[in-house]
Image 1 (cartoon, rainbow, N blue to C red):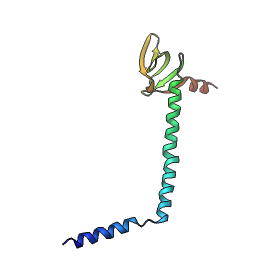
Image 2 (image 1 turned 120 degrees about the vertical axis):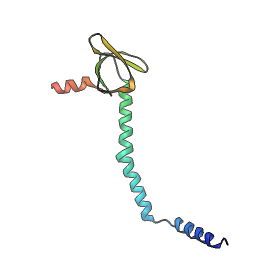
Image 3 (image 1 turned 30 degrees about the vertical axis):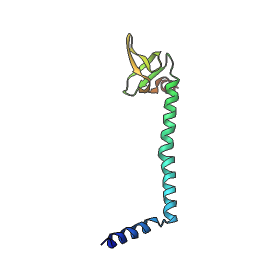
Image 4 (image 1 turned 180 degrees about the vertical axis):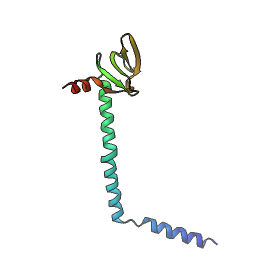
Length: 110
């Protein structure tokens, strides 16, 4: 009664255990490529963004992730006060500041 399903389970279990060294090599190469082309650059970019966020200072020209250009007036622990136009200021979370615009403007002039 249980002999047919049991024999099917035994043959599939024994067949699944026999690994090929070539497939292990393929898996290792795949993980290596995944790390160096996807994980490592993403971690590097996140580290650069974290360093940029920590080094923001008053007077710096920045761009938000929404595309708003402004000059930093005040830096708090979690937010930044930006002067977008004369007398018009907005408060933005530090994580939403995407780039330092003052460096790009000086590079374009030279």
